[in-house]
Length: 316
Ligand code: TXA
Ligand code: MG
Image (cartoon, rainbow, N blue to C red):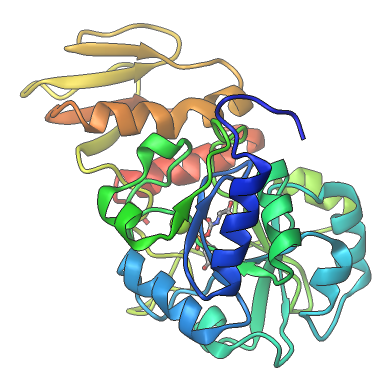
C-alpha cells in the first residue's frame, strides 16, 4: 500500500476489522466517498447504520467486497454482463444490483430481493474488507439527505460519535458516489449516474436504459429527490444569473460573477467531481445565504455531476 501521513496504518486497519467482526460501525475511505460500514452478514450491526444515519429503513445499502469471488457468493445469479463489467471496472466506482442469496439479511436490502455489490478501489477499503473476512454493508458516511464526505474532516460530529473508529485515507479520488446499474431485469437499468458513464457501460454490454424520474408518493430506492444536499440553499444557474438578495458564493466555470465569494471550478468532469463536495462542505460552514453553481455542460460525461447538483438543489 502506498503510505502517506493521511492513510490508516496496518495496525489501525486490523483494529477496525476487529470492530467490524464485533458488530460495530467503522467509517472508512473509498475512492468515491467515505463509507459508514458494518458487517453485512449481521442484521444487528446493519441496524446501527440506519440508526446512526437516521436513514429510512426503505433505503437499501451497498455491500462492499474485496474480490469478484466474494461478490459471486452473495448473489443468486451472475450474468455474463456482470462478469464483463466486474472484469473491466472493478475495483472501481460501479455498483451492480443482482438477485441476492439468503446470506444477505433483509435489512441490508430494505426487504428487496436484490442486492447492490461493489468492489471499491481504495487500498484501505480493500484491506479492511479482506481482514474483516466478511462483506461490508456501507452507505455514504453522511446523515440522511446530507452531502457525502470526501475527506475525514467532512464527517458529521454525531456520526463520529456513532462509530467505533474512523479510518483515514486522504481525499476521495472520484468524489461522487458510484454508478449504480441494475442487472435484474430484461435490460440493464442505470439507477444512479456516476464516474463510469452510460457510454462506458454500453461499450461493454450493449444498450442500457436510464431509470425514470420517481413517480408517485414512493420514490424508487435511492431516488429521493432531495439528497446529497448542503444546508445552505443551493441553486444551479445559467450565465451567472445570481440571486439579487443575500450574501452568496458562486461556483463558476467560464466567466466569474459578482458574489461575496467566487470559486473557479475545474474544466473537466473528473476533476470537477473530485472537488465538488469538498468545496460545498467548506462553503456550507461559512454561513452564506446561498450557493449558486453555474450549470455544467450537457455532455454524457457530466451526467453524474449534473444529477448530484440537481438533487442538491432540491429538484427530482
Ligand atoms: O460510492 C458509493 O456507492 C458509496 C461508497 C461508500 O461505496 N456508497 C453509497 O451508498 O453511495 P448510499 O447508501 O449512499 O447509496 C446507495 C445507492 C442508493 O441509491 C440505493 O438506492 C442504491 O445504491 N441501491 C443499493 N441497493 C440497491 C438495490 N438492491 N436495488 C436498487 N438500488 C439499490
Ligand atoms: Mg448516500
